Image (cartoon, rainbow, N blue to C red):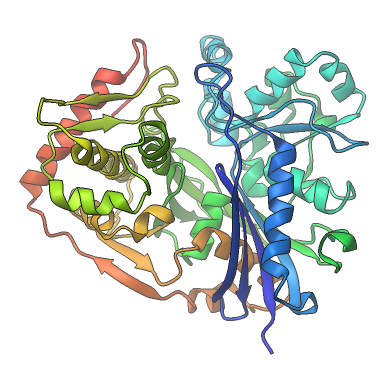
Amino acid sequence: MSQYILSIDQGTTSSRALLFDERGQHVATAQQEFKQYFPEDGWVEHDANEIWLTTLNVCREVLQDYDTSLVKAIGITNQRETTVIWDRKTGEPIHPAIVWQDRRTAAFCEELKVQGFEETINKKTGLLIDPYFSASKIRWILNEVEGARERAEAGELAFGTVDSYLLWRLTEGKSHFTDATNASRTSLFNIETQQWDEELLKIFDIPSALLPEVKDSSDDFGECAAHWFEAVLPICSMIGDQQSALVGQACFAPGMVKSTYGTGCFMVLNTGAQLIRSQSRLLSTVAYRVNGQVTYALEGSIFVAGAAIQWLRDGLQLIGHARESEQLAEQVGYENPVYLVPAFTGLGAPYWDPNARGALFGLTRDTGIAEIVTAGLQAVCYQTRDLLSAMERDGAEVSALYVDGGMVVNDWVTQFLADVLNVNVERPAIVETTALGAAYLAGLRVGMFASLEEIRKLWALDNRFVPALDRHTADQLYSGWLEAVERVKSQGSSATG
């Protein structure tokens, strides 16, 4: 009889629960979207209670046809950097969750740069100074919510990224933990010493009493309360979603790189035990920590990927469903004169320009829905080349890119990726790699999988996309993208392209 891992995949636009068996096969899924709030230009918020309730709902739904005694553990993977501060007694958030995409702290981040803190923060955390990361969001809540700073200093409040908040709710306040990958995205965690850093806490003016304890990505995080799922289930992994996809893709060897296409796009290169300092404005980060051993990574972050297609669907109502985009792109082809730069909340790597805003270029009287939708798909591929070029400048030699996420079921996108990047694009048989990574790490903790090497052997190829476009044409198309990006960058951007 099969045994299962329940994987919670809490993302930016939906909460999902998936069951995997001992062979890493995906056997059941439930998903529920939740509301996005945009109270001001560049602000993005979630209702943390709604995140919790949708997570609880999808877990119950996915378990309803299974014997919970066969579920050996829970793994949690989550949208990173999104910041929640809650009351330790009630579990109630004191402010809406501030989402990773949110740019409200851009002015404060500029102040830190002017004061000369960028080198210190980068050396300790591997990150740049940017509103993307959690620390400036924490500071904003403490300063803007009445009484919050005093309550935090008195130990009455708790901070966490979404993994910590879900863990708190599942264990009814018994566990206040995070893992090294999520900690590494806060701008408060020293990725060399693997500790919260006193100097960083002082720079951001954040009391240490707020912070969770940091554990391995595969570890004992506590047990969920019995009444949630009519069983006491151990929680045995927590890991940020992009690092989880790296694990789910079995990219365990230094030099292997994956790119995940969800709300945003995130390319992560395994650098092994070596902490590589990027010269191309990429991030140095923790890939995963198992048995106390840290594996590092280089990461490039694109803020808008699938979110652009969601905008075309819901905002402009150009399409009724994301799957329609493939057929439209096939009609238009590669040589599309329209460029969409989806800088809705600024530009991520390698530009790091929080004040840039999105734009459409190349519109003519003949431009129609098909061209605009195709431009949305191509923008994701062009942004991926931005990241790959930056990694190559940092010394990476990439011959294959392992892809996952909702967008890569689109064959047109994956083929255009291969053509514009000039590398093989490998799509796995199981594209649910983000949820799978958390499941693997939980299974590793409870002995369902013996080692990372055993997990590596479970990876299987669905399709390989080989470059077929001549380099001159690919370079011309990309050159048009770079020109479009230059036109949306804000004055004073310190970007390198």
